[in-house]
Length: 197
Image 1 (cartoon, one colour):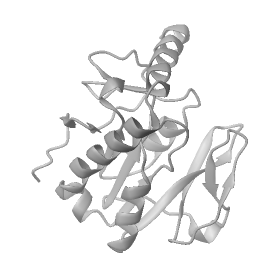
Image 2 (cartoon, rainbow, N blue to C red):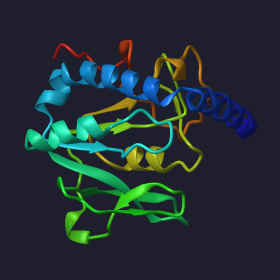
Image 3 (cartoon, rainbow, N blue to C red):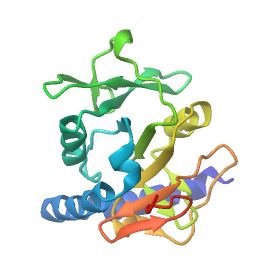
C-alpha cells in the first residue's frame, strides 16, 4: 500500500476533525457514548481498554467515569517501547495521575503491577483519523494499535469517532487490523458486531 495515500487520508480527515468546535466535539462525543452504553457488549464487559482523548479526538472521559463507577477494570495505553512501537494498557483509578509523553498525550505512570492483560471479556475502544464501512482504520501512523490488536486476545474492538471520520473506503495494508464496529454520534456502524447480543 502506498504510504503517501494513507498519509493523505490521515491529513485530510484529521483536518476535518480539527475543524469541529469544542461545543461540537463535546456534543457529538456525548451522543456517541450514549449509543455505546446501550450495547450488551459494553454492559457485560469486565475489562475496558480505552484511550484518554487528546486534541480533537472524540471525548472518552464520560465512558471512563461510567466504567469505573460500574466496577469494570479500566486501563489506558502507555507506550512501552518506541523503537518497536509497542504499548501496554495500565489499570487506572478515579484519582489517577497522568504523565504527558513526548507526543503530548497523557499516559498512566509506569507500574508493571498495573499492566492489564486482555481476554475474551475485554472490550477495546480505539481512536483513529478515519474509519470505513468494512472496519478499516487509519490511525496516527505509529501502528501501535494494529500491533497490539494482532498480538492479543480480546472480545471486540470498537472505533470511536465522529460521523465526519466515517467513510466508504479507507486504504489499508495486510498488517492493519479492522475494527469490529465503529460508533459515531449517528449510532453504530455495525460491521462484525451484533449489538443486540
